[in-house]
Image (tube, one colour):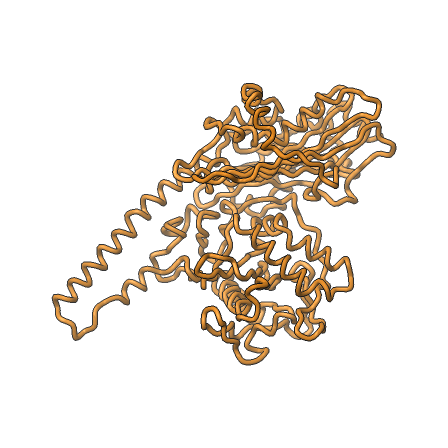
Length: 578
């Protein structure tokens, strides 16, 4: 049985396991429908991914000898346990206690959180030593977590820390959840250290490809992040300290000198066999990640302009494979709630058009790698039969800017294909934030892998469209950037994402340049989103500097009063302010 931190690609099965167990074991005993909805939103794969990327949530899993996920746990940055569930086929085996113990070790050793500050909701106290004798696991034969602490006297978990409260439930059942999930910050989709490189106190823990810290720590990204010193964090199966373990392999003192030399020779060969390939792998991966952090310039411009020459060239191929693209209508045509809440969305009364959600799904069928696509975008249709082809083309191209470089035939000039195991995936959600007869504003979130498991990114594209002319309002068309605005924009970015305070490779001047429509170094660009009351200016970034890798997007909120000095004479403002 292995217990370790989860990787990005494991969040989907982890969320499925949690929801299956919750639906069967807890949901029938929850009387408040809102509590159920809050929990489902919290345990949603996308929400878990966002919180993990922001280093606000750390997920762990228990795996059997066949690498089947048996249990899932989550602990937040403050030391509050928010999820702890074993699969339905793995109940009553003490797995929750083992996962809990691992999370406690992570919090105390990796996050420097005092043991008494770890917050465990009442319904999971049964898995700690304080709830009785340690439970014996029928799977591993190990005892469950000793020494876990409940909430301190008078201290209550916040909704963000845990959905659970210490309520009584039916005998033998887990308790209901009553805490409400705080509104997540989906606009802060930043993937620290390539997604899953959480900062373990003074060291950066290396998490199998997702989140290698390329800088301050020794031997990063060496075959699941092993550290050859004696101070590395031990993550139950990954990250063993070789400096200590190999030293324990010496022969007994009473053995002959010849046997001792044989043993030492074997140990030396083993160390070389591990060290040399790991050293080569580290440099190869480091170079690969640096390469994938930079967009191909023509690819970036293609996504911005909404014109895809490669799509035109391969138009016939796309039509030939149309049957592989399953087109469905989604129930909510406004899209997925990832950017703003429903209260911030503006939809005018008596619109002259309707919106239908289109969905492109291509399941993985590759044997020599991985390739999967799931793309959603809106399509409008006028009630009076007016032609909306140009508008719909803009929307489709925005959603499929990255998808079209991968499918049906990968275009290598835009990708970084892993020769051994190509990994291509694209998951696009959209959200309509402003909808009138004159203006349509749509935000697209594109989470993709551009040819390798190391090349994981999350970009934000936005389209603000004049529906009468099918023209786009770009950020440089509607806002005038000067040094004052650039500095204010940069400060808001740093407030949203603390890591930019320690990111000297991105400056206020560069932030201002992106507001002029530039795509800097193929790594940074800005756009904006219209909402009911405020306007959001957003930065998408692929940041690389010595010791810090992060990518994703952050959103900064502005009132009309704040933007008054920087507004251009674009007719957008007349249409928006009506």
